[in-house]
Amino acid sequence: MKQNSTSAFHTALQPVSRRLKPVLEDLPEHIKESAQEIRLRVNRPISIFNGVQSFFVTGNGISRIPQEGITVFREDMDETFQNLCSHSVYTHQNEIKNGFITIRGGHRVGICGTAVLEQGEITGLRDISSFNIRVARQVEGAADDILTKVGDEILRGILLAGAPSTGKTTILRDIARQLSCGDEVPPRKIVVIDERGELAGTYQGDAQNDLGCCCDVLDGYPKSQGILQAIRSLSPEIILCDELGGEKETAAVEEVVNAGVSIIVSVHASSAGDLLRRRQVRRLLETGAFRTVVLLDSAAQPGKIKGIYKVGELLGQINRDSGSGSSLYSGGLYGIA
Image 1 (tube, helix red, strand yellow):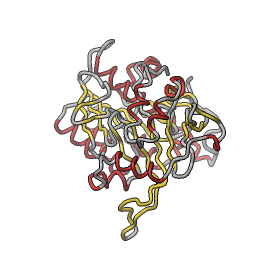
Image 2: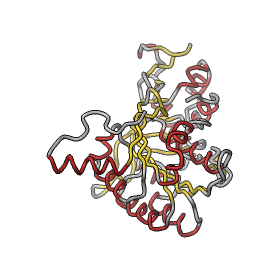
Image 3: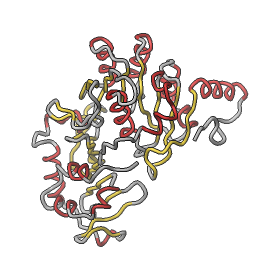
């Protein structure tokens, strides 16, 4: 998928410490364009991951040799963390305990540290040890291949599956934009449930990413609650959200089916077999909300389709295999490239 510019890389640097930010801003343009993750680890070199391999940031660019990279100090970590929380750790406590904060532009920052536990539950983190800044990019046309191959089936429910960094969020963003803008077809009323702020990148009520002119965004809502609120109050034709899988979310999807609303969601799965071995994902498929599964290929080729599957065929095959005692999926059954 072609990236529009390096502006996303620069906005992802918002929280980075004053010492490290200029070094990252001065990287060559082709490095900024391909960067998927910026990694800061205490007392380790800054690294950039491009979907294939990691490089280490030096004073003159990048290197494959860790010893040549610029070391991240504890002071850099502390300053970055305060910037990440807008100097108010308390207001971000719920996000922190879940291991990430989403910043303006939809960039998601994963946080590693020592868990603070109360009665067996994580209530926070201390001694922050690393950050993973995932660079979110709006790529117009990212959904073209899927929309062409799936056609009108998109309105009968799509489950978009793939491993991390395969382009799921980028594609969902473009599906919302294209269906809501109505360039080729009449615009659809879309509601995006953006629990982590990655899809719309909403900042002070204004979506930083273009999701189209007929799209409403429920920002920060837990997906299960957002789905139900959308049905009750926003009369959507299509509900769209990222990374579904919990029991409450599955129950909410069942309500979508009963309301006659289409739904397009993503889940983590690296293969058709993996998809059906995950109990919660299989339950999603069994709700009847989805007609088609689109499986993405790999982080090395984000957005590339690995296979397109009919949900009925997948469930029928797994049931036949279970009855006969045969193994699940010896290869890419039903895949349509």
